[in-house]
Amino acid sequence: MENMKKMDENMDDMKQLEEKMKEEGKDLYIIKLKNPVKFEGKTYDRIDLSGLKDIRAADMIAINRRLSGMGNDTFQENTLEYALYLAAEAASLPVEFFMQLKGNVAMRVKSCVMLFLFRQG
Image 1 (cartoon, rainbow, N blue to C red):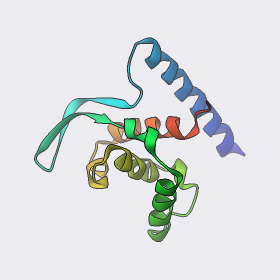
Image 2: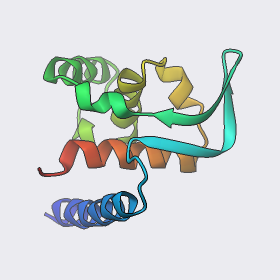
Image 3: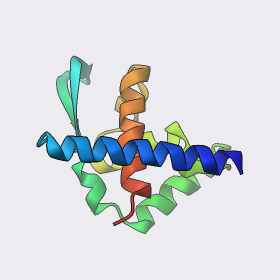
């Protein structure tokens, strides 16, 4: 019960963030990086998660199965690991790109994915 209350509070925070970004004319699904990230010889100054809009249930189920096979069986869609796998799918990048992100950037990715997954409307 406590987890549900905490999740509701987090969703309220994310909805406020979404509204603020819309007011400022920013794209919710583009994460601008203060410090560019190098991966496989390419430098990224942003992460484009606009592909989340095209995610299908089959993609999500495939990620669930992959994580279950790795021993992650509890509320997968609330975990950082699930968010990074889904972000990898949405951005058409290897999950290893997301796994090497600094913690604060990884949490920004998770926030974006969570907002996409749990927002209403």
